[in-house]
Length: 151
Image (cartoon, rainbow, N blue to C red):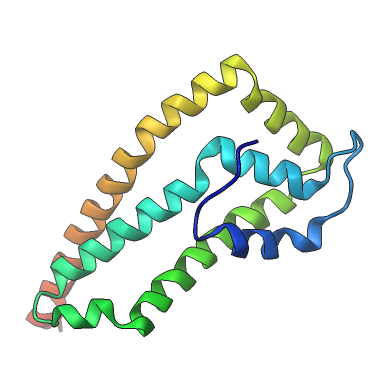
């Protein structure tokens, strides 16, 4: 497994610490979870999702000064959001048995699994962007209805 260079690496390690129980084949659940998250590009996906969300908010609130988005409290809020998303993945992996987690890692380590990952990594940015476009359209319509005043 290649080393992670994401700003989420430390929070991920801290989230996984409670699951340091060894699996049957000698790998810790932490190692297997890290390997799975790495194969699936979860860290990159979360980074991409947050950057897309940030860009959408900047476009949706054009009257805010640029300094607002550079404020450390805003940056911390986005960082905390990324950690919360990461926690969702970690908690989902905790629901798997050792056998299931080993199966996933073995599959994604295989040639067929790597092909599936390559396809997923191609699709993920498209789906993230499309979901935010749909969310933005929904928010605009809901805001219009709120401003119109439904009785």
